[in-house]
Amino acid sequence: DIRNPDIRGLRIRMRILKLHIRRIRIRIRILQKTRISGSVTGLIV
Image (cartoon, rainbow, N blue to C red; front, side, top):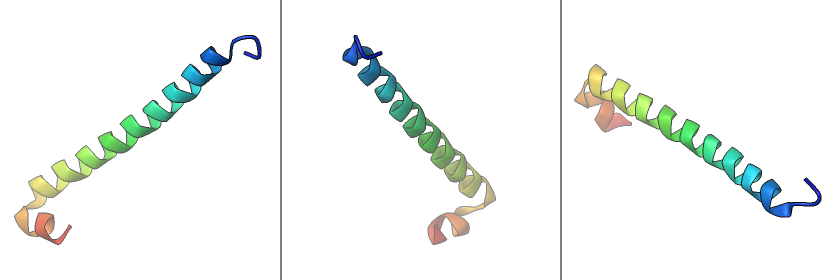
């Protein structure tokens, strides 16, 4: 990894992207749950 700093940068970016995708998926799940439970809970959130 020391010989190629570009590869290391790409790996770090991939890790950050994976973390962001996980957070987005969790947010979508929460939004879907609030929609199913009702508009009242959606307004509170």
